[in-house]
Amino acid sequence: MAESQDSGGLYGVLIANILCVNQYEQIEAIIQHLGDQFKDQPSLEELSERVGMSPDHFQRVFKSWVGISPKQFLKFLTLEYAKHRLDQDQSVLDVALDSGLSGPSRLHDLFVTMEAITPGEYKKGGEGLAIDYGMHPTPFGVSVLAVCERGLCGSFFLPVEDEALAEEAVKEYWPNARIERDDTKTKMLAERLFSRSDVSMDPLPLFVRGTPFQVQVWRALLEIPLGSLCTYSGLAESVGRPSASRAVASAVGDNPISWLIPCHRVIRKGGSLGGYRWGLPRKKVMLAWEASRWAV
Image 1 (cartoon, rainbow, N blue to C red):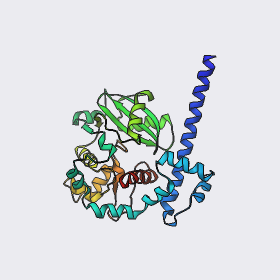
Image 2 (cartoon, rainbow, N blue to C red):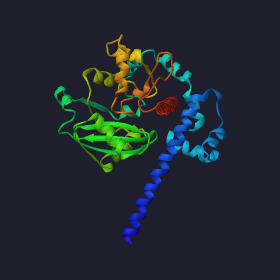
Image 3 (cartoon, rainbow, N blue to C red):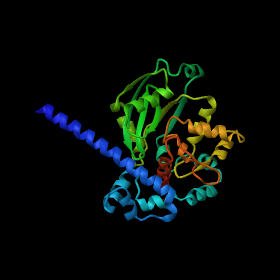
């Protein structure tokens, strides 16, 4: 009897995970649609019909993933919001430094510390390093979190929950490390990173593998607080390389700690969102999610 109950429980978890991923795919499609058609201000009824849900059910599902209603998301999705923030702050990094990063940003309440790999360790590609990784649903899709004894060493998004893709993402960044899947070791970390509550916690150490220039850019990204945006050219100026916007953009795209190192807060000078390593729909929902909290 116990074996039957366990099997049923595992089956129930599997079905729940499949539904969870399917729901994100539906919401991701809606986010992409809103990004293309936000000027038309589509109604709740129109959006729910696109995914075959009732308006009430669609509203609940959307809010469970995004954290805000479709109407609120539309409000904060517009490029006018991005332009307004840039015009208001001028130099986002200066504002962040002046404020001491002690404002309402949940990410900075986590008190992130970052340690970079040594040049010798960089060449070894993580040789001798033991890494555990896990896959978890988040408000922004399936996340892969990788941890080692020195801290969080990878955070990546996947199009679907797939163990082969997850392992490939970790190995691409740490090619010579010993890698093993263990969702239990990263579950509490996932809850901490993607919780909607604003709770101060103990320092969260990051361990990154990158060139000195990449690490410099990633440290600058950590200075951009929630609700604020920065341009690639502004970021280049902040690291003392005003003529290296393309190199800075490349380093931003190589960010190995998605969400926590907020590369999604960097946009183009004209106010357009630009690209995102893990898909523009995710970048849009992250900015809208954060914008709704900044405005409260």
